[in-house]
Length: 230
Image (cartoon, rainbow, N blue to C red; front, side, top):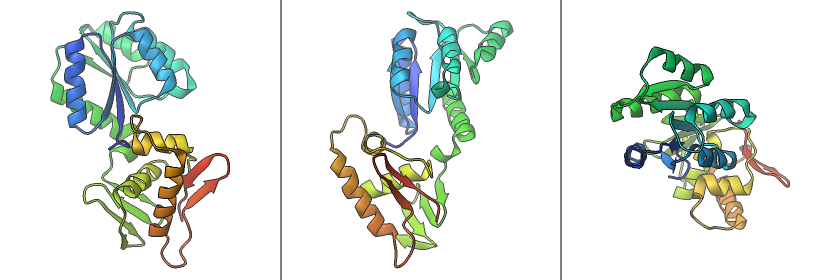
């Protein structure tokens, strides 16, 4: 699903990068990979993931320098960063954490342990993207059972409307442009036009607005849509 947590892996050992991508995708994450620090910096200016796995030693720009630069930018100041390194000395670990890394994993490492650290960090910093049940106001969405309720009454949604509501519930009150909704719900690799968003917003509204209940979806002229607690 395209609205799952997004992780970027910056690792110049291509085999390790492929292994991490496979394991992260198996856990349900969307994954981007980069081999060079300078190319990762460019990619991070275009799209900020939910979490970054960053190797210390990289061509083009070191991981430690990239981490330092990311912490100086408002957009990436709070980006969760797990640093990978072959350096196990305590002084190096302290240096990595002092530069702004949130966690530190020494190679060779246990892949299941790294996956557990990724999930734990996402749960701590962005609980809404790993929670099984999302609640905003009268609305409740259960990711495991694929059920949606309003005031305890079950609502039937199509798969796209379910993903659209799930995306909104992860950031209540935030205004999303049509382009952001297309990227977050349909995915970057699927081409659909802006009108498709309006059609599915209309269908979602029709499903969740039962009787005389207030419409939680707000249309912001010239900007997009947001979901408010009602």
